[in-house]
Amino acid sequence: MSAFLSKLLLEDATNIDDGQWIVAAPFIYQSDVAGQTFTVPVGFQTDLASVPRLPIVFLLTGDTSREAAVVHDYLYSTHIVPRNVADAVLREASAVTQVPPWRRWLMWAGVRAFGGSHW
Image (cartoon, rainbow, N blue to C red; front, side, top):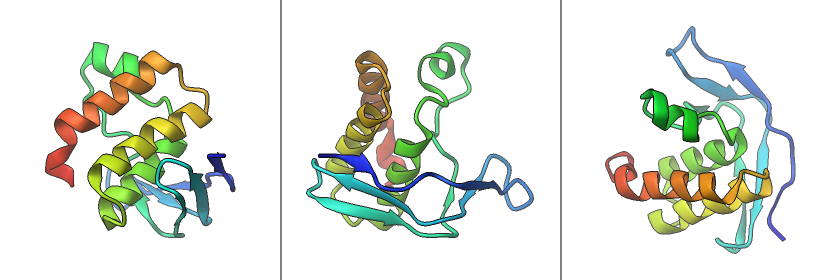
């Protein structure tokens, strides 16, 4: 069963780069979709969900699943799974944190449509 096996601990990294966060303890996620467990290491830098700051877009999808966003950023930076799997993990991990289905779909559709340039 998909689950976060540790708590997300972040440190503000604005002294390094605005809007950035640093993982302060190993962050572990077990994914059924990917069939493996991922460990985001201490020191990994993330911007959480890269949602455009357009009022409606951010209102609908912004700051809704930090845990899923950190795992997704890690998968995008390491390429340890194919992009479509990384995006499916985002949707799966968002479900684990109780993000409503409509919002999970919007986040997934956004990364499928616009995430390619970050891959």
